[in-house]
Length: 483
Figure 1: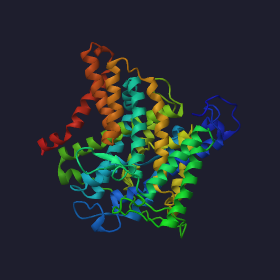
Figure 2: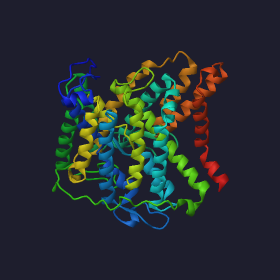
Figure 3: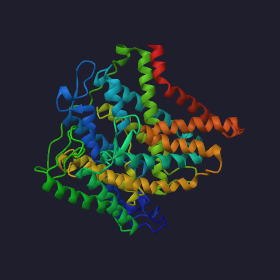
Figure 4: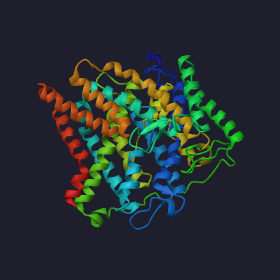
């Protein structure tokens, strides 16, 4: 972690972003912003693969057979991510990058558009964002944030560390599904590292780990660049190619190579393609349940991510608060509105921002750098595909290790704290969802502390949220019950 010793502000930029006050420097913020972008840039490639496609036969088609063209989704993904990350930096002054949330875009592609059109699905995303902004603006979202015990906030940060490390292991092919009930996962292929991309990931983890251990300035950025160069050289020799969803031993998303072209004009045709016809198509009850699901995925996923990132950046108080919290919550809600309005899916705070924070980002200047790079990526799409996902995955594993240090703030000698914290930590990676870990932790905290004689210490809001999470977890049977 970078020292937070205060220094005298040296200029207007320093004073505006409170750079010296937070123990940082302009160069440190720029490095952090660069690293966050490189860690997040994969979303420009991945989001179009989830909610878009290159043709109707391999895209997520909606109830009327409509689909979102890959290039158009890539353009709006970069546009909204850039604008909202800029807003987060300039308005909330925190080093959080925003982009299309992976949990929500998957829910849209595999849950909503089987019953709705894409414009109708994006209309629900927009409504979800309006509700989040209302909750944030009225202070209710912050009240819920404040009601969370400090131990659970620390557990959320640790759980996110394990979660992003697990994402890195899976994205790199280091951990793979066995396809059987037991064991469900394995090391590499048949217990061995067999692919060149996974070997590149291992090289990246080792290289970044060494640089971090030696306290080299710019360790993660240097590691990303160096490992990418290694990947390009290896690909030019062995010609592995991209997997295209078929070859598990190939590069996960894009094969690292110097681009043949640099500039490409973005197609922003999807902006404004929104409809609120879901109420008529599937009825009020079913639409309300879908909005409820989106709200929970968005609301608590972002809250947990912000908690973990603020703690890692060293800008959080012991109770998990941080400067600009209310503004950050509002901006994150606007990200859902903008994402729905542009058909990019709900934009939320990305846990991958931890990579830039690990590089030293402490202020919104880092977010401004990341946001500008996202906007540039609309025109420089070929350049965003140079860094392979395996290199970004190595960064996530290293940052996950850094976030584990916050486990020391949890009192595991008190089982009323230990079990809810433990469940929060392990459920996130095991279910691949931050909100699930938060929900299980909340429910366990309320039940155990209430039964053990500490009911008066539980905030009324925590009772309400825990009850809502119970509804969230049984929403499947409830949807079936109401037809």
